[in-house]
Length: 380
Image: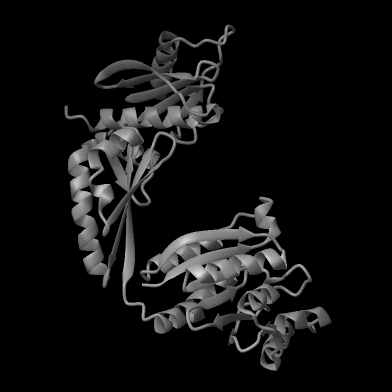
């Protein structure tokens, strides 16, 4: 099975002016075809550095895909960089120039002289038409490699990837396997404790199992490579069954599930009306629980669990709610007070945090939401 590397080109990406969504899109598309991806790179608009990156990728991977740098300006260096990496000259292609003229004429304009740059591609490369933009694409073929250069504009890139590049790669590399991914979301146990429970599964070669820790949530990724989707699904289902058996209610969802959505669904299933109370969170809990009120911070800056619980009782009564969840964060103490009222009773809980201070609010809210989730799932 071939491997691939993705190179995104653009100084604006390096400077954080725009977000690179192309790498994620291409990676997810290639993985679905069974292609292994071991490295992605972002390079600014510098011909020498781009050429070096492409050359290095060609030594490691059969498939190299670049995005960006195919425009008509002097700071669009991809064509020259690919040619240099492959040891080729650029050549003017009249057919590509005709395509560019035709595209621009749709807008009632004539192409400028500098747009002729886009009709130059590495000599002997396979020209790929761009029916949705003015930048032609191309594939440089060697005995080992296919280097495909695509536009940086996401909708153009996606169209050409599916219409031209994917069919080419399937034929060139005889791609007849797929990779499917299933991501299980966990809360209530840290990454280390989850690792202890499933470490043997993480040593498998196919499917593979990996962990990714977030703030208050841990993801378990199951990836299966198979000849068809049904076989991949079967392989994933068996590993998922084992993980759920070992972790129980720690697993709260999968794939597109989000903790707050799972919590609200569990509360709704109980028939509870829910209200939230927060302090020191700048509206974070309110963005998770629609009906949330803010408690004013006391003059001494310290909200006790008793004060939080009292505020929770009042909010619950005002809203005529069945359940109420309260979170008060204390940044200097790296701690949070939580309170919960349900038809089953009242509880308070204090938690401390050892991670980055800026993550404390999100961690506190996720821990509180998981607490409510478990309470709502308890049997009567």
